[in-house]
Amino acid sequence: MLDHCPGAASVRTPTLTIKKCPQCGEEIEIFSNELKVSCEKCGFVIYNDIQSCIQWCKYARECVGEEVYRTLTELPK
Image (cartoon, rainbow, N blue to C red; front, top):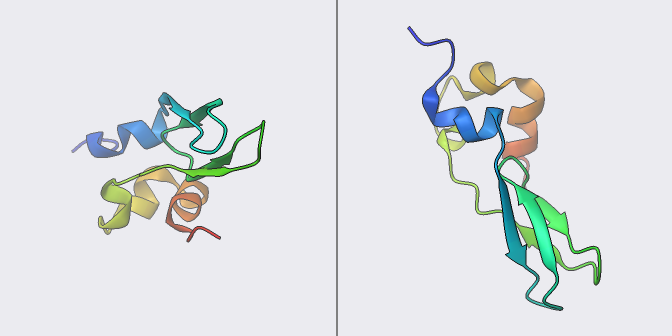
């Protein structure tokens, strides 16, 4: 049996993506384990389109840890 599910690799070892702010055009860095970030220039909130096993796997909390699980399952405000 694996120590951790390979499907959660991008959660345990985050990857960086550069997105463009739709409001001001500034480049925004967002990691694969972040739900949202604010543009440093204008404050516009960018949401990450995270779709992973965290949403459906019954072992997700155990696999990625309580803190990461709570962060990735909280509803955007």
